[in-house]
Length: 149
Image (tube, rainbow, N blue to C red; front, side, top):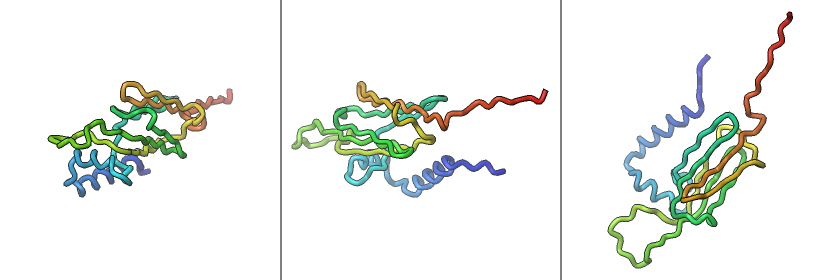
């Protein structure tokens, strides 16, 4: 039996696409996250971990007002969107610009279903933390074995 893994295949495809379009630098890629209509860039940067009962998502969002943040879950896709407002003078002559501003959106595909009634989020010091409890139907169940004796 062949051990096929969808996520491994998708990661391989992503790496191949990165190699094809390798002339875009990471700096350009991050700036494009704030362009209208571009919502698949890797901003905000996230960590997604799990244990037996929950997924834990932490997103780095320094300089973003919590009032502009929007979190949606549709099926197994979690969407983070918001806006970082520029705090620079409009007439400034840039010497270097590494911090982007404007609207952003990122969609994160969760590997399992979550209990939508128990999701919670907090935003402290520029880090958005989301607790996503796994749905009972996807948690492993221990099955007891009966013996004939």
